Each structure stands twice: as structure tokens, then as C-alpha cells.
Amino acid sequence: MNNTTRFISLDKNGICNYCHAHEELDKQFPINGNEKKIAEKIIVDGKNKKFDCVLGLSGGRDSTYLVYLAKSLNLRPLLVHFNDGFSNPVAGENIKNIVKKTNFELRTITSDWRESKDIKISLMKASVPDMQLGTDLGIASSLYSVAAKENIRYILSGVSFRTEGVVPLDWNYLDGKYLKKIMKQYGTVSLRKWKPNDGGFNFDVKEFFYYSFLRQIKFVPLLYHVNYVRPKVEEIIKKEFDWVYPGAHYMDDLFQSLQTYILRTKFKIEFRRFNYSALIRSGQLERKIALEKMKKIYSSEDEKIINLCISRLGLDKKYIDNIIKLKPKTFLDYDSNYNLIKKFKYPIKFFCKLGILPPSLYLKFFT
Amino acid sequence: MKKTKIGLGQLLVEGGEPERNLDRAIELITKAKKNNCEIILLPECLDFGWTHPSGLEKSKEIPGEFSKILSNSAKENNIYICAGLTEKNLINNKNYNSAILIDNDGKIISKYRKINILKKAFEFYDIGNKLEVIDTKLGKIGINICSDNYHDAIDIGYVLGRMGAEIILSPSSWTVDYNVTEEMDPYKNKWIDQFQKISKIFGIPVISTTSVGYIVGGPFEGKKMVGCSIATDKNGLLIKGDFNEFASDLKIVEVEIKNSGIKGTEIGKKIYK
Image 1 (cartoon, helix red, strand yellow):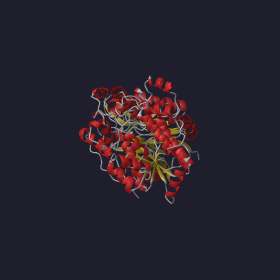
Image 2: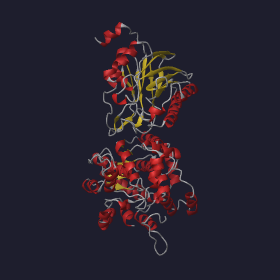
Image 3: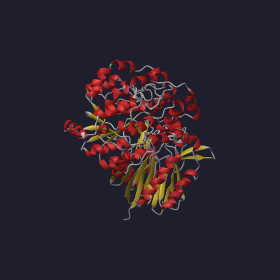
């Protein structure tokens, strides 16, 4: 990592807080077969229900492997895919194959394009790096909404700190209030209102408490417990599901192309940096090789796909050039729940330990 | 009686992306041939997507750049193709929502321009003025498009039947609201009732393939296409495509294409008995 994030700090040995966060997660989530115990509990709690868990599926590597793992552990997930208009057709083919081969039921939660388009444009106008904020909130909201609707208590997530890392707060800040404030300032359409079974893009503190405490829905990062090695995982999912690589990490969503381009050229941010750092810490990538890779523009910056994103949003290259020229901002320039969250440091730590809140939440905010 | 294998190519259509859409169409055509289909039916406006604004300016003539791609594929794969394209007519500078039938030599043997255009789509497509039934090696084929099969436009299907169609092929782009999900019945009786009615009266198969995908431009933003294409014959529903909004798929149906014998004034008696 480097000083493109204001949240980085180095200890006396020159080791950064993200390395410490990784080590902390490594201690909290050792690879010792705990995923089997977790699965047993989910199976018992889901007895007599049609599904025992919700599983977020994008068709990318991580979520596809999560399906494989869930099947191996005899779980009965309801697969949930969120589509806000930028689904990668390659990932779509993967989802189709997974559903055919597993017979797991799929629920596709689609946003209203008028909303999702307006959110994307508003976030660009706000000049913040969190251009996927709407999509990330939409995914979270969909998973919890479907779990609430189907009375399911567990959500399996395909996040993996060992291969993905911990993203700095000012590179990717996830907060429903933050989105609402930006939409109020830059949006042209109103976000549809929250309903427990149809969350839309609403995922603020109130909604989070409703799902986590009243409905007692738990977020389970199952991949934290397994030895997730990318080449091995790819071998498995290719064999099991005829899986095809969507083109780059996170490229299950075509908007990643445009986002990666703007992040690099405007904010000097590259998500590869924390991804590669995680792989280096996990012993899956040599630092020297990672540094070499960083010298080249990442494959997700595909010019054709960038142009597709621009035209799909009804914009042109000149508009994007003007967005890039705007003074860069972060979530700290807008009203959000950040100050409130800071006040609740210890309760958050407590609830993360109990597994009521996602375990990386505390580290992400307070590392 | 010989049965004809027909592929229902539920194509993923991305609005405003003709090259990507045509690439996927070629993949489906090749797949249909590998599965020994003699005809593949592809969706409505598969080039730009139905009512995508880019089609207004960038649409092509028929025959033209896009139809040529399909013709080449038909010849290469020795297969009949029925597909919907956005047509630019340079004579009157109007756009049409058209469907073409290409034979297995790659020749366009029929072109139909949609008649029952939705009011919100008037700015995109002019109204067609001709119905045709074409005699082919596989039988007499009639073509209509999507909302030509609305319950209050069933006359269009009736006319094709009266003209001797032994099968009706209908490229479509059936839309539903964005919040329709897999556990719901997306169309209920919106399409199947008319299909079954025509199939029963004329004793012929009626087949429609819809696109899949998310509408990203034009007056129908907020809607999507979720597949569930259907084929009927005189006995009822033959096949239904999968519910899906993000990936192409091919369903195959075997039908008898034959003259049912009913014609002329006998038809009226059957319809209005």
C-alpha cells in the first residue's frame, strides 16, 4: 500500500496498518476446518426450510467457488444475483451454468435502470472514488431483503481477505446515508423507498439494524475459513461449472472498466494495490512480480468496454474528461454516518466478535 | 410425418451494442446447427435492442451490413434463420421494426415490417404495410413480430393463417417490470392465449423467441426481458424457455410443418362459430 490513502499509518518497523489488519484477520479466522462447523449450524437452523442460506452470486471467481463450497458442505442456498444494468455477459453465462449444474434456485434482483443510471452519474458528479457505492449497497440490500422475505437467517459472502485484502476507507466507503446525501445534491430521480422485502438502494444504519438485530440475519464470510488459492480454485470451478474468467478481477460488472480508468487517472487509486498486497501476504504472489504487474495498465481498462459504459449511461467521452478534471473529493467531504460510527467503536467491535456484524467492519473503520 | 427441429435462440441483447449482439447471435446459430436444427428463430431488433435510441441513427438497410452477417452464417451453417433487425429505409428515410427470413443458402427470402407498433414506439418505427407467407423447402412460413400477437391484434395471426401459413414465427422482445423475479409467472396469459388460439384454429405451430436483457435507453427504461419464449401447436404448449435476464440460451422444439387442410370461408366459420 502507499500514501494514496490518508488512512495509512506505519509502525516503528515500517509495517502499515493494513498489514496488521490482515494479520488480525488471519488470527481471528485460522484455516482449521471451521467452515464445516459453521455449515452444520446453518443446516440445523435451516431445518424444515426450503433454503438454509442466501448466497450472493455474481458469476465471478469468488462467488462461484462459494457455490462449490456450499454444495460440498451440503448447504441448500438460495442464490441471489443483483443486476443494475452492467452485468458482464461472460459472468451471466457462468451463472446460467452454475444453476443448471447445481439445481440451486436463483433469484435475480434487478434495479430500476432510471435509478441506477442516475446513481452512477451522480457519484461521478460528486467527484468521489466510490463510484460503485450504489451497486455495493444494492447488492447488500438485495441479499438482506431476500433473506428477510424468505425467512433465511444466514447470508454467505464470497469476500476473502486473503486474496482481496482490506480496502482503505477513502477508496471505497459504504454507507447508505452518504449515498442519500449525494443523490439529494446531484440526483435527478428519487430513490424508491425502502421496504423490508425490497430494499432498493437503501442500506443505512436503520435498515442494517432491522435486518441484523430484529430479523437476526447473519453475514457469514465463509471463504475466510478456507485456504483460498486462486489457481486451484479456478481449476475446480472450471471443471465443475465450465466457468470462464470474466476478463479481470471484479469484471463480473462491466462498469469496473470505466471505474478503474477514472480511479487511476483522476484519483491515482488502483484496487490492484490492495488485492496484490493481500496475495503477497498470503504467499500467493511475489512482491517483485506484483510491482512489475503494477507498471502495466490493468486489463479491466478495456477501451471498448469503457466506451460501452459511457454510451450506456447516455454520456460521451468529453463528459467523462470533464468529470476527471473536477477536484477529487472523498466521503469526508459529504455528510455520512462516519462520525456516528466512530462513536460506537467498542459496541461495533463487540458485535463483530459475536458475528452479528461483518467481522471486517471493525477493522475497516478502526484499523 | 417428418418433424422439423427449430431452435429458439433466446439472445442476450444489450441496448446499443449491435456488434456484441450479433456475435452472440452467431454463437447461437452455430449451436443450433450443432444440435441439428433446420431453423433458428432469433428475437426482435436483435441489433440495437428494441426502442434503443441509437437505432434511430445507426440502423442499417436490409439487405445491409447486419443482415449480411446473418446471411453468411445461414449459408455457412446450412440453416434457415428468422431474426428481427432495425431497418433503415433510405428511400423514405424511415425506420422499421423488421424481421427477415433467410434460407439455408444465405438468401433473404422474406422481409416483414411490424404492423402493431406500440404508441410509445411510434418515434422509433414506422408501420409496416404488408403481410406475407413464403413457400420454402420446409413448408409455408408466416412471420409477425411481438405485439402483433396482442389479443387485440390477433387478426394479424389470423390473416397469416388464412394465407396458408403452416407455421408462424415471431421474433419478440417481451418486456416485464424490473422487479419481476424468477419465482413469478412473468406474462401469465398475455401471449399464450393468442398462440394457442391460432394454433388450434389453423392446426399450426406458433413460435416466438424473446430477447433477454435489461433495457438501458429509450421510453421503456425500468423494464427488462426475461426469456420464457414459447412454442405452441394444436395440442397446446410445446416448450417454454428458461427465465433469465443475463445470458443467451437455446431451446429446441420439434414440430410438424404441414397443411392442415382448412382454408377459405371454412376458416371464418371456425373462428366465429
